[in-house]
Image (cartoon, rainbow, N blue to C red):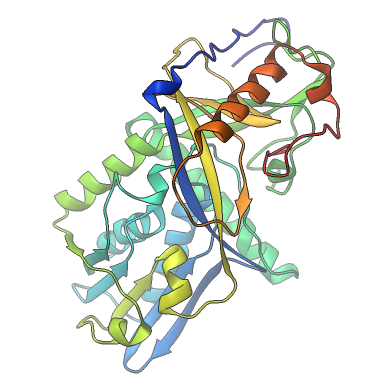
Length: 351
């Protein structure tokens, strides 16, 4: 953590484009609200848990606790079989808590970590690109999920790839400002941000960095140690799900729910990242005009948001533009520091 008088190191943005250090993922955004609710289909209890946009890792443990509460509230305990559909972060955390409840969990998925959308994530703790319904009850539930998720991530610590970080922003962050203040406190204001060239005014939010390669690998190892069975299978309809032998199904299929459950509210949002060399001296996060998250494996630079695009092939030219834009911020480029800078529609300006 940095004091007000400390000058933080400037990132090294150099990269070899021929090495193609680009990755892309497709977030499962659901209009109006993420879906976290039970449904009875025939003789099965189905608990839906999907549509969290770019907030999957952020909300994961909190949503998993909600799933556990729903299932235990229906009287299911003690070795009863449960099918979890999907092995992204929502499925893996739900499986972990249901295993602790004493249920016999089996995970069905078309692919497993490290080959999931959750692996293609920056890892900052912030409820990005997720919507919830209006009204006091929905807000209370959302805040409960955020509180539970933050507490669980914080208690897991470095063995799960979690660390406390300050995130420096040029403007107040809509993502952080929607979080209860007992989770993310009021940010520190800087008349001049503590960088050599990025000396505009700004803010520092106290948050977490959750490193997906460490977090997901540890989750999978925990589940394997608990003798959870992983079955490679892809579903195309609710009728196929109904044929499963388990009486309890937890649906964490993300965008797969468009086809399986005919959910027309789901929309893909493509995000692209550039993976720079590790820079251990960087211990802060940055997000506003694009974002930068230094992790153990890479310095992750991102800033794209393409709604309705479900192609997960990275675009090298777009990624190079992201790097150029974020680098320009750190050298104090006036045109990017303006509140309404003229940038491409796909470039994130206030993450």
